[in-house]
Image 1 (cartoon, helix red, strand yellow):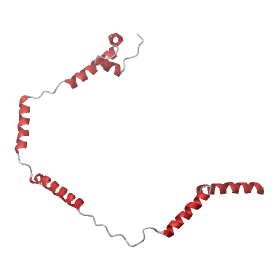
Image 2 (image 1 turned 120 degrees about the vertical axis):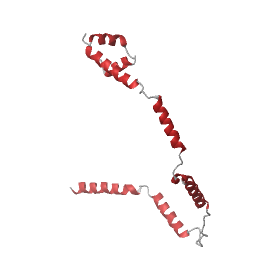
Image 3 (image 1 turned 135 degrees about the vertical axis):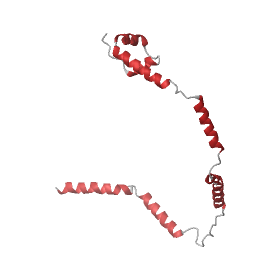
Image 4 (image 1 turned 180 degrees about the vertical axis):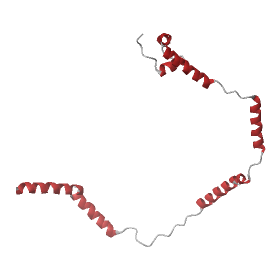
Length: 152
């Protein structure tokens, strides 16, 4: 048989019962290298699947240690954390609920007629110009180029 060796993906598929097993099983019967790789993968899988052996005595000891730690009083610094958090929240609430002082409006007139006249003049002059202000430098470039050609 001139078939190449099975890839790792094909071997893993066979290990988990996936893929085309008829063709692959025939190749495994003929190829000792692929069958050895499949056997090694199976051993690695079996080693990871096996549960570790933990005795009941070890679990009971661990449980007893946990219960002892839960029964011990906590250190003094941990008792003050809820009180400090409540005080911080209270201080924040007081800061946010304080009244805002608004200053009285100034005696200046609400409408400045001088600046309004300037605004209307500027707007009217912008409306009269057909060419945008940004296009002026570009237009001057074309005018300079046309003068150079005339002088030659």
